[in-house]
Amino acid sequence: MRPRFVLSVVISATAILLVVSCNSGDLPGKKQSESEQVQASPDAPVASSKVAEELPEAAVSPLTVEQRLEDFDYMWKIIEENYPFLEVNKRLNGEDWLANKEEYRNKIAAVKTDDEFLGEMTFVLSRLNNGHTNFISKDEYPWYLNTYVQAGFGYEPWINVFQQPNVLARYNQKPLNEQTSSDEISKNNNMVEEEGVRKETSGNVEKVIIEPDQIAYLGMRSFGGHLMEMDSAEIRDFFKQVKDFKTLILDIRGNGGGSSDYWRIHIVPQLINKPITYNTYSLYRGDKYADAFMQSRRLTEGLQPIANIKDEELPKIPPEATTMFKNYNKNVDIVTPYHSVGFKGEIYLLLDSAVYSSAEGFAAFAKGTGFATVVGGRTGGDGLGTDPLLAALPNSGYVFRFSLQMGLNSDGSCNEEVKTVPDIEVDPDTSKPLLDQPAVQKVLQLAKSH
Image 1: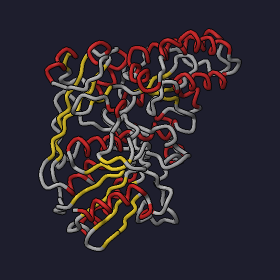
Image 2 (image 1 turned 180 degrees about the horizontal axis):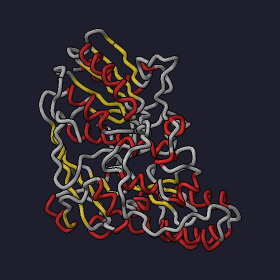
Image 3 (image 1 turned 90 degrees about the vertical axis):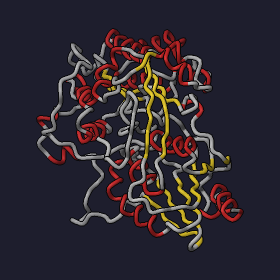
Image 4 (image 1 turned 45 degrees about the vertical axis):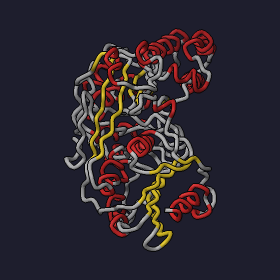
């Protein structure tokens, strides 16, 4: 449930929240994760679901040619009937994914080992060119599972995919109810204590007073949910310190996302002095596979037939919206002030192409509502929606995820396609010292001109 102080009035959908949404490169064991990294409870309830009924137990190794092809066909059907960005991929990347089925299938038939099979399947999904669509590795499995368990109510279908017998066998995992060792449960949880003392700061936040009483800078490298508790006090103290400044720079360059609550609770409500309303739209293909996930996240409440979207007067809606999609939600979000510090100066938000997922959601919000002047480079997109869906291949047990809905900005444009274009486009390079970076220099020029 969203905290009371961030009022979210959503017509037919729950509030937009990407709890687990890594883009490629922001994965466990690599650079800073954008996902929730939390401790799973072995006693957490796992409700029954119809997500993957009657799938056979895994033939872990080696798979036959027939089993590999069955898995390929299963994945293909799910993507073909559920994935929202097939036409976007054509326009952005010149990739007609569906047209390549036989080529991809022949390559699957030719592989000799299970590892080669996974590599080829990974390549096939990569041609969709979407950071939320990929296979989950063995190292990542406990990290994702911990997140969904901690998220609790509403994520049973995601948990159940991970708990299928064929998946457990493939990933060499025990069922949740057999995990008794705290090391097993939280081995991928990076929120640890060092020598019994919890770190006072996460290191995620960078604070700079560029010019006393005039210009302040706050950088956030991740919106990871596991960082929120630690970062919130640091951010609030800084906002109180600079509340009378004329200019505040918020920098999310390189931020791959995490949880939308990071900015919806700990940034925007403290900097606004009156409610802000923002409309977005979520379009769904309507295949039955998604039903359990959507019902669990209450996304089916108030779904409207796609034909009704013509009444919304969306001038930039993609041409496939009324032909490929069956229904949609209109999301009316109202973010209200909470413990506002009374900031009345100018806010600038710095962006680059690495801004993705829930960080992209913040960029789209800032641009669409005028919360901040957006400076830098075009973002990475796909920031409007909920968590990617999971599916397990019936024979191999490999798990893949994929984007569920097409998120539309308030003008109807597809967020994954157009992303967020800055109000002021300038080189977003971060390799130089802060004050020498072109985007920061541009903001300083603007600040001095006001």
